[in-house]
Each structure stands twice: as C-alpha cells, then as structure tokens.
Amino acid sequence: MPEAFPASRQRPTRLFATPYRVAGARATADPVAQHVRQTTSVKQVVLVGLVFVGLLLTVTWALQRRLIYLPSEGPVPEAHDVIDGAREVTLGTSDGLALGAWFVPPPASGNDSAVW
Image (cartoon, rainbow, N blue to C red; front, side):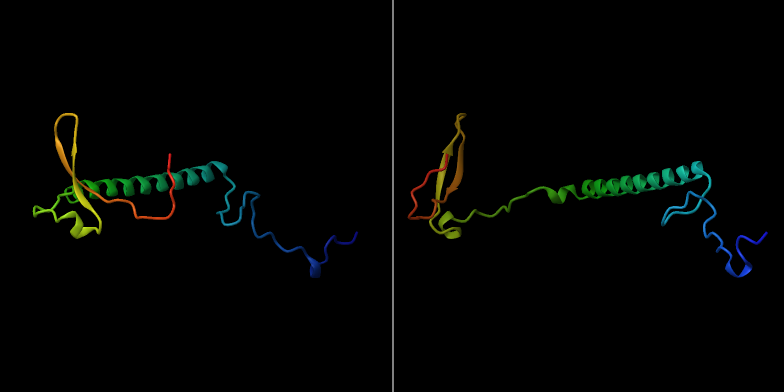
C-alpha cells in the first residue's frame, strides 16, 4: 500500500497545538486558566481606575482653597469705565436688601424681534 504522503510531500506540522488559540492571545488548553487570566486583567484595569480617581479626589481636596473665588478688596471700577454704554443700577429684594449691579443695554440693531 502506498504512503498517504510521501516523505517529500509531508504535511507541515501544526503551529498551534490547541484549538483555543485566538489571534493575539496566549495558547492554552485550559479554559479555566484563560478565564482566571482575563479576570485578573479586568481587576487590574478597575484597580488602576480606582487609584486614578482616588488621586484626582486627593489633589482636588488638597487644592480646594485655591478653587474658592476671593474678589479683590479694592474698589470696584465704574461700569462705564469697563464696558461702553453700561450703567450702575440698584436692585431691591423683597427682604429690603439693595444689590448693586451693572446694566448693559443690548446693541442697537435694525431688527425688531422678541424672544419668548
């Protein structure tokens, strides 16, 4: 009986010995080991994310005083000195408090339109 494949025309050997080989993944015949490796990778990603968020919160807490708006203690300039056409107005509240504000009229345009 003749050989199925003569010595000169033998089949090449298989490069991967297991059917679980996926492009870019390690070859393993044990699906449990592969699952453990994937779970470990997910845990590492979650851990890195938690560390990053923790560092971000720590830096924000440490620098929170710099996030507070502290206006200058000097006098406020006149409205018309800062914005052309602006004027100072006083707004009264229902509890009797007088609030200083600036009123800037809209620019004059040829369009007479209203926004509802």
